[in-house]
Image (tube, rainbow, N blue to C red; front, side, top):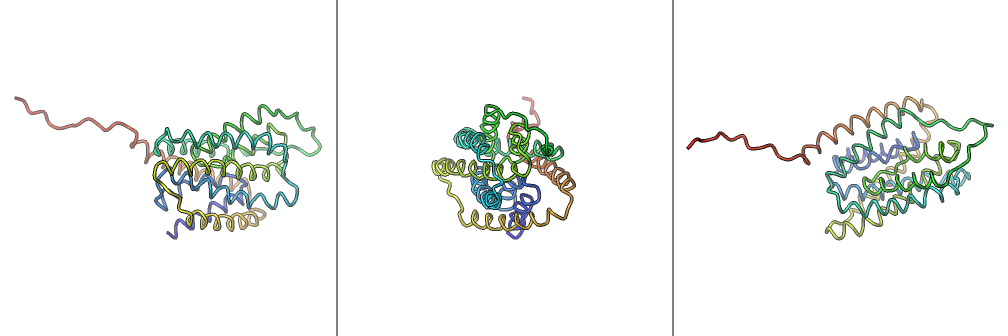
Length: 267
């Protein structure tokens, strides 16, 4: 179990270092290090990610570095989408959800290699499109509900490029949106899992959240002394390795079994 606790610390550490991406480690840690069933791991990850993100957003809120209009435009559709994604999860097997998760990991790796650029100081902010922001919020929310990732690697670029926010506001705003979406999806999963006779491991959720929060604060301190660009590229490489591993271990589970090669006995 010591490796699971290390994994929990890495989840928070990466969130503190990068502002996003840490939540994408939660499901693999719960599945491969703790041994949780796929659907249960996805549900528990939402509670863990929500707790860590909420605590991470608190300092930004105190510094007034959250754009509440973007929380409304992006967050409300995101909450609806996450609830919908959690409801749709009953129609997918846990293996299929993991395959979708692996695809998201590879997408996250691409996004990490191409970090969003902050709006230059003094340059006019482009007009915001609530429709575009809301549509992306809904789409990212559905993804969150299906595979249990917060989607910060998608939310931050959307807030910067579509919403015209500077990075100083985008990170805190993203964390608050992630928290709201995650808790909405988790609430739905409680009902979904109860119908499948599965119950949450609350001690595990609380322990992971506490370790993750501590890791996120440590990561925020360390991030001031290390190259953010190098961290992103290193984390992207790790996501590629993990994504390929998840694909390799789960694709055979959805393929039809090979035909029998028994010798034909002539009559």
